[in-house]
Structures are given as structure tokens and as C-alpha cells.
Length: 365
Image 1 (cartoon, helix red, strand yellow):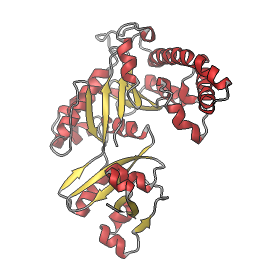
Image 2 (image 1 turned 60 degrees about the vertical axis):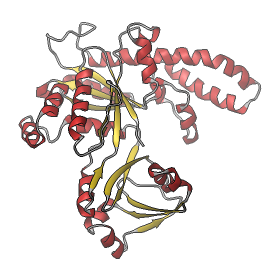
Image 3 (image 1 turned 90 degrees about the vertical axis):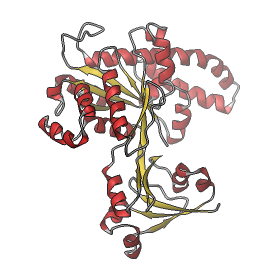
Image 4 (image 1 turned 60 degrees about the horizontal axis):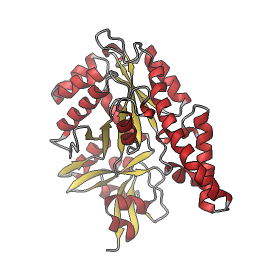
């Protein structure tokens, strides 16, 4: 299971530099991991996970296959995009197709790079983009809710439920707040998602800082982090310029280069993991002599759903899942050791998959 994370932002904030670094990183991964560039502005990268290498070594696997995340470099946005200004219509159409938003904001000063609005104000930039999304959502809902209200008044159950959800979203949008702040009961979350609102999508603010601030951030990124907390969004600070350099350095020299900058790992690793976590995704593994592979499911998924991530027939004919916690698998040197120690569990259809589970599924063909 994969998902798309759209990279958005105003012009000249480092969005394309960041995307180029991501795709160069993916190209470097191609020797070991599956990679494809679907279109010039779409690329897939492996989700960094050191557990995968540990499992490969223990299982003596011939191949290692990580789970992946797709990044989409979305056309730049300008003020007035909700009315079609600039490439607004293209921007809005593309953003509706992604699952989450990585919102790049400029947190660096550079007189050689002109800011589209003539000032360095990352929280203001973020508000500009979000305002355009809220205006587009507001227009969409106000157009759709009028005929729906008429149906709801006739007592039609589905119309009443949709009208209630739309009303929640409209109330927030009219207050200048994104739809993702709506208070929802568990059973309302999926119908609310199906409303197709752009401001309902999870957001990760990506603070593009100068090289000297890559390790600890700066005053600009601190302000964005505070905004992220208020907006129920994620936040990560990286230097797109450094990441572009790192992507071009030989793997054997990267650690030394990063250490010189006070970094333990490339910022892109943190960005990829943050994007992966943004939708509440978790990883389970399959491990054996042929391959060790990471698989993605949503947090809270039951065992048959995890089986279905591998193949739909596994889910349809699910019998049970032989399950070993990652820590047990490593501590007991693999499947045989875990089984002998009584740490392999047989889980049924009601089992909720945990992050790091090493699983083998039994099913009827």
C-alpha cells in the first residue's frame, strides 16, 4: 500500500530543489530498491527503516524490499489560485489527488533569491496557501450543500448525514480554519474524508532553512513549528540545498559530510518518515530466504487487511497469522528461535497489527 504526498508552496521557497533531491536520492537507491519515476514531477522513494536491514541479515534474505512513498511536485501557487490565478486550476486539481500535503515554506534569507511577495515570512506564506485551499473548499461546499439540504429535509438518511458533516466543515471554513480541525466521531471519519476537501488532508510543514540552521533550525522555523501545533499539522526543518548536495555525494562519504554539519542522517530521511507517519501508517514485515519485505497498513488494521496488502486472495482466504514482534525476532535470532521460545503467536481475524510485526499468513487458496 502506497500513498501520494504532494509538495506544495509559493514560488522560490525551495520546492523544486527539495523534489530534485528526493528523486536523486531515489535514483541512488535504485541499485538496491525498486524505484520508478512515473512522470517528470512524480517519484517514489524508499522509506528508511533500519529494522529492514536487521531482518534481512537474520533471515539471510537474497533481496530486501522497503515500503515506499510517492512524492508529487505540484505546480507553484500564487495568491488568487482559488480563482484560477497563475496555475491555480492545475494546482487545485492535482492537490485533490494526493493523500497528504508537504507544505514547503522558506525559512532562509538570500538576497539573490527573490520572494514572490517581497518578504521572508514563512507563517504568512503558509497562511497564503492555506487561505487559497480554504476558499476553494468553501466555494465547493456552498455549491454542493444547497441541493443536499433539500434532500435532508425530506428525511433521507444519507443526505442528513452528509449535510451534518458538510455543516461542520463549513462552520470551520467560515471561521478561517481548515476542515481537518473538525471534531469527528470514529464512524464519521471516512464519510468526512469522502467529501474531498483539500483542507481536510493531513499537512506537514517543511521548513527550508539555510545550511547553518540544518541541525537545529532557526527563528523562522520555530515560528512555523508553533503554527503547526495550533493547526494540528506536522513540522520538520531541513536544508533543501544541503539535501541536494548529499544526494550527489557517494554513499561512503555521506556520513563524514553530515557529521561535519552536525547531522546524524540526511534531512530527507526525516522528511520521508514524517510523510509516512502523517497518515497514521505502520509497517509490518515478511522475512525469509527469498526476501525480506516491508509492507504498509493503516494504524488499527486487522490481520486480514494486512494479508490483503500482500495479495487480495490472502485476505479472502485468511485463516490465521503467525506473528512475531520485531524485538523478539531480533533477540531470538529469527523465526526458529522465536518459535522455540514460545514467542511466535497465532493470531486470528480480530488481531490488530502492531508496527514492526513479522508475519506469515495462512490462508485457503
